Image 1 (cartoon, helix red, strand yellow):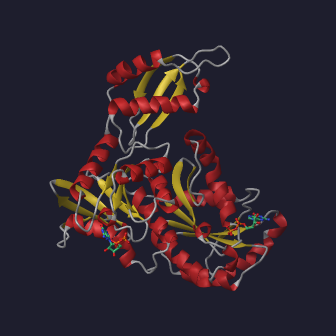
Image 2: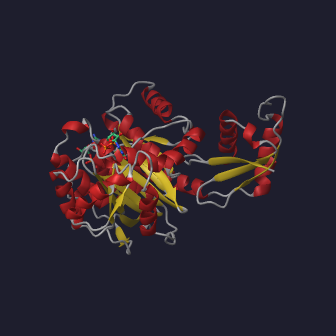
Image 3: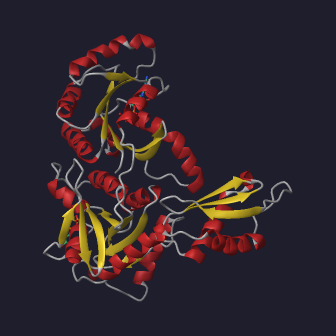
Length: 433
Ligand code: GDP
Ligand code: GDP
């Protein structure tokens, strides 16, 4: 299961500042590898050896100054539905506002852990000012300063204590999440795939929240489908706003092996599609892209090729991803879509024997070593795939610090050419030996 922490609260209390503090250190490392920064409102963090995802719910609102109360209520509602732990941020400078009271009223009824963080307690003089927040009826709170970091350690201690520890033994069946923007055709795709009878075998039990994970047997494949379109129908938040689709995608993607990203052929592949794609990449999940509603497109000679090229430009550098053109309406290539998702699932579980890996890769790096720096040559001696849930490789060499990103990408491309990791993010480390 996943560990998703949502930061909620009214505008200007310091949610984004806290979010950045939680994810920054780690993002800095990740981004120096991938060379890209994308979604600012979703990130991974860890504390006391436990990993979790953080969502800054406020980050998704546009024009946060004249935000409506109704909007905040919806955000909080969605955070409750889609996260595991809620951090409720309030502001000691402003004290309790009516909106804080309103949010607290919602949160008091929630069964999930809620941690209240009284922010902007930059010095000890303000600790006493925080006392008034007991009046919100949420019990204990944590005084923090998101700007200088004080108190955030205690907050994180409390938070990680509430995270799920051991990962539940994984079901061996592929878990596919059907994700995408509102109206891309997710429900239609699922209906086309599983038919009206909804060939349900069993629900996966054992989760406190509504089950969104259902086992199917279609076209000779057995798989679990995580249906974000279906959750929308059960949710208290009915609107199809972009923010909500991302929130839902987060949980679905964290719980899947392969994300099936459905995009609408009649619209451009753009920011929101990209965000959903990067959620999958960031979580090291398999990905396939389905360009749906292909029946509506007037085709000329290069229409498909051009559309595909545009998507690949947007998703660079992780371009080794299957892109299929389908129609949920006419069921065109529906079977192919599932077959491809199964292939990606297998690629993600693939283990390359060490001898085979070395035979191939050492031969390649021998003839194409990393460029010498200050007259020093990097010698790669040995490599292996790590026993991790997703493909990760370590290359042992004399001077790992001299191996730069372009060379890492070269090695990644060679791994992809030789061993087929189509649709799967891979990680490469260089280590001293
Ligand atoms: P959000 O709208 O809730 O995401 O709030 P922001 O993170 O954008 O912060 C709103 C304002 O409060 C900004 O000017 C921040 O610099 C400031 N702020 C955030 N955290 C702190 C803090 O711990 N202490 C002080 N003094 N100011 C803070
Ligand atoms: P969701 O919000 O992603 O679940 O999208 P829906 O499945 O509800 O589809 C949104 C709209 O697009 C509906 O009116 C569908 O009938 C239509 N639609 C979905 N797939 C296709 C398709 O392949 N071709 C055409 N022409 N329309 C489609």
